Length: 294
Ligand code: GUN
Image 1: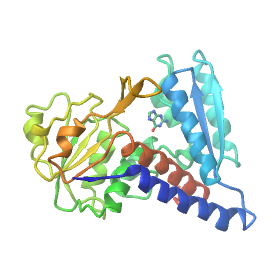
Image 2 (image 1 turned 180 degrees about the vertical axis):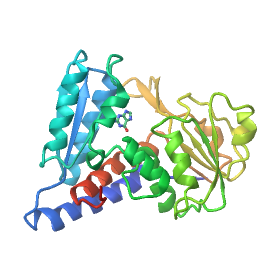
Image 3 (image 1 turned 180 degrees about the horizontal axis):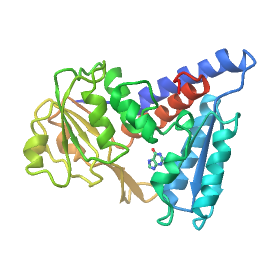
Image 4 (image 1 turned 120 degrees about the vertical axis):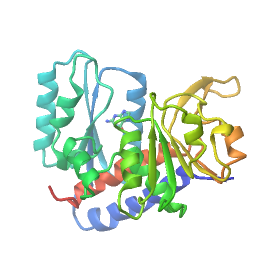
């Protein structure tokens, strides 16, 4: 078994981004890329994610800003904030941290982001472009996964890729990316979800298994073909006496057992997570360079 070391690959990409920002932008008298985040409410996980994004920006020399609003903000107020960021020439890209409180309509909010600043790649224009293989911002987790596979020279062409989970931000887009006609695509993809019958047998037929179910330890060794490549998108906190924080992180895959059987596997933490984070930086860099035309 080999580790797909997302932490290592993300550090390498961050170093490359930092060099580009310094030499091509700051030293040339240009502004650094600027990523903004809108954070509504006080969900602890969302606060942690946004803090990580700020830290990542600092590390590569980006400007970051966070717009914080109370959980009871009205939809109109939030839309006004988005219009402000859409129009702000100093902000290259921004994200609205999800999930949003129930009274806010997520689709309306996302559709109000200008596609050119939608560095999450969640706007229907970016999703549509991705489906059609037109340059677009790719959602960060799927983008991070294909970058990781590419880094380890794991061929997807002609392979059977099985994706477990059909969320809008991971399962659905990764299934599209892997099946597209492209360097990191050309795979035969099976997308499994809660209504799939015999998910175990389908998973066990995968050359590349992408697991994004949100179910702790769901994938056991009997669901994995010998020498398969396993990508674990899951992230769960479990109590642990041995750590200072009192918890540790595990994924959707039974790592100990599956690792013995597969050829490559992502650890949790240190696999997909860091690749997701660096992908947002890559999208922001593209936004600052106006690389994608809208
Ligand atoms: N919540 C969980 N993941 C994400 C993400 O990638 N982007 C945003 N905006 N919210 C999230």
